Image 1 (cartoon, helix red, strand yellow):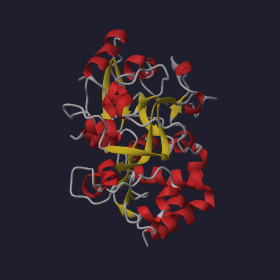
Image 2 (spheres, rainbow, N blue to C red):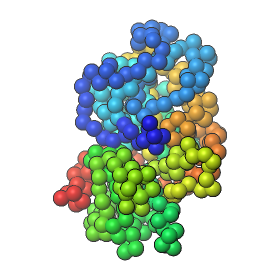
Image 3 (cartoon, one colour):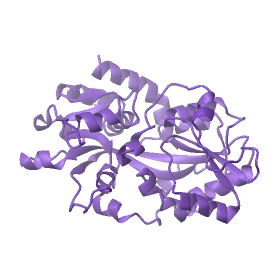
Image 4 (cartoon, rainbow, N blue to C red):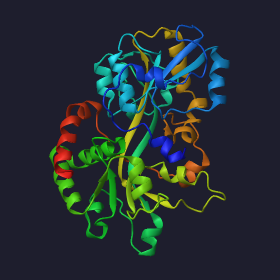
Amino acid sequence: MNINLRRAIGTGLAAVLGASVLAACGQDSSGGSAQDSKTVTLVTHDSFAASKPVLAAFTEQTGYKVKVLRGGDAGAAVNQAVLSQGNPQGDVFFGVDNTLLSRALDAGLFTPYQAKGLDQVPEELQLDKARHRVTPIDTGEICVNYDRAYFERRKTAPPETFDDLLKPEYKNLLVTENAATSSPGLGFLLGTAAEKGDKGWQDYWKKLRANGVEVVDGWEQAYYDRFSAGGGKGDKPLVVSYASSPPAGVLETKPLPEEAPTGVATGTCFRQTEFAGLLTGAKNEKGGKALLDFLLSRTFQEDLPLQMFVNPARQDAKLPEVFTRYGARIDHPATLAPEKIAENREQWVEQWSSLVLR
């Protein structure tokens, strides 16, 4: 599987799935049962990845084996966890992000626990720091990516900000994902809402539509089919993707190029933070707490970037060279409080659909 796709797969929003999904899609890395006190069960989305040596290190340190249950995309996995609240299919849930966090917290999905190592996590990532029901594990930014060669051939500067995308020189150049069906698409919408305010974002999207933005269902179609630097025959030099897409795109290139063929418009970024929490009613609460500690340890945190192409939450975790060399530094990404997202997400998506798709 392409490494960019592995990060993006499973992040689109989906309808609630039945209880059979986790059982059918789950992958058991331990061979043990959820009832086994020496097994701790991690419920997560399809994008979760960790190297075998790192999981083996957890077992060596604690005596617990990790059973991983993957339950589809992030939205579906959260929905399923909410449906089984109080009688969970595992001990720890990983993968609820700030766009869905309030729903999980309001449902009483998690039992408070202050994980070891939290003192190394910036306070702005600790969105539930008063109660510690969830622990921040990683961050990533949804941003417009651009095809360097396209703009170099035309001796034109690529866009840098949301407002730049409205300029005539970028007319008909941008492809984005549907905010109703795709996590990057939703993140881009939320970024414009954070930038332009509750009412201003609608006027922004009217102008963006007038400037020829194209909307497709999901990230794979946008990046591989429509983006001119996505490896296909696309003609759009601007695409909504991730700040980590440039380093991910060169990882398998030998020798490594001087710079990635794609760049990031750093003024168009919206931050996603992923969390993990101890599930209410967990059968192995002690093992779950040990796993949360481990997810925040430097061992796991420094494994994250090349496994899931996200940034570690710990500020003392070292990034691999490919990230520091080819990645974009996003100093001031757009953000919204989870409560704000929860209050407005549904109506914003409906309004966006009316403005852009109809």
